[in-house]
Length: 266
Image (cartoon, rainbow, N blue to C red; front, side):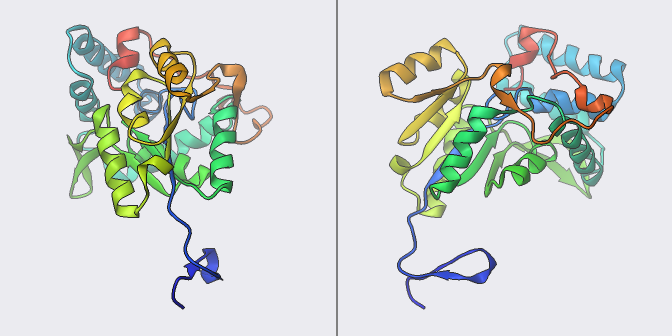
């Protein structure tokens, strides 16, 4: 059946296949209102002393001027020796807690994602975080692609090393590779982010959106005609209503204690 496009469930649409278009979304503080890596690490360790020690190490490195790629790698050393499957299951429990919290997803950004899906775009999540945090988010949003940091695994356990870091220019490199594999034309794709480190991603496609009020990105948006989306908490929406009487559902969004820690592994 030449030229036909297979649809979900094995059905076919008549006529030629539609061109592939991809919408790339940063995750932390773009789609969600928090830093998934730090929020999850605190949840997974469930040990305030261990968490404070990890926080202190990353903060000290950032203060000393270490590049984000370096501190991102340092972050994953916290999982050395842990079973990949156990961390993944913990990630789903973390997500189940967060999804019940009002404001976890940013309303206007998710609305934009849904609009693009309706228009036929595939969705790719792009993040310095890892699959333990991101798989449940991608599944909930129906994202076809996940471009993220990749901690090394040996015999089912994390080694503490990282085979790929998805920060800054690496996001654009991964996006270009996905577009090339998929046959998508960059000028027909879009990307969304909230931080200047997202600029390589935002500028490797035909159009972009800025979430929040970062002045650097706002300047690019004004010059290039990018759309602006709110990033304030009042513009956010949860995935599901909070369960009545569930204290986990009412948990406040995670907030790192220092500005250096906020940017340590972005």
